[in-house]
Amino acid sequence: MSGIAYEVDVRSLDELSPRDLYAMLKMRLDVFVVEQKCAFPEMDGKDPEALHLRLLAGKELLASTRIIAPSGHDDPAYIGRVVVSPDHRGKRLGDKLMAESIAACERLFPDRPIALSAQSHLEKFYASFGFDTVSDEYLEDDIPHVDMLRPVPRASA
Image (tube, rainbow, N blue to C red; front, side, top):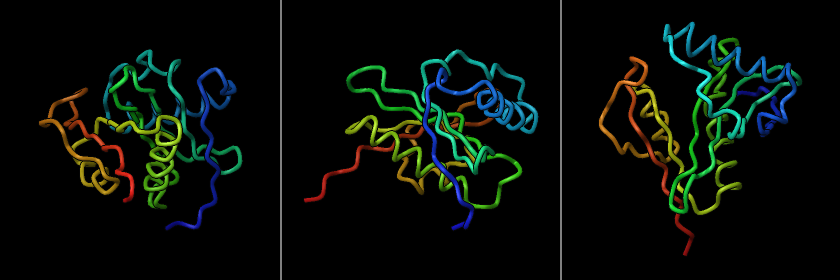
C-alpha cells in the first residue's frame, strides 16, 4: 500500500464549504466529462441528498465517492461517483477509497447490501471488494457498465 497520509471526511453537500464543493465537482468533471470524453449531466440532482466521502491530504482533495442512503426497507446503500485525482493515481488510493466507502456504508447503514454501477473494465477491481455482478452489460452515457452488489457480510459463528 501507498505511504500517502490521508484523512477521511464524510459530509452532506450542505456541510461542504464552497471551496470544498468546487474542488470535488471540478475533479469529477475533469475525470468523468473531460478525460473520459463523456458529455452527460454530471450534476444529476442526487448530490444534495447524498453523503460525500473524501480522502484529503491537508486541504488537498485526493479522491471522493458519493454515498446514497437506502431508499426503502430492503434497498441497498449505493456508492457512486468513485473518482481519484489524476495527480494521485498509481498510489493505491482507489483501494483505500473503496475500503473507506464500504466501511462508511456498513457503519451508517448496517445490515444493508451495497450497490454500485461499475464501468465494465473495473468489474474485477470491484469484485476484489466483494461485489458480485448482478446485470448484463449495458451502456450508460456511451460507456459499458454492469450493476454490482455487495451482500451484507455474514455474522461469524
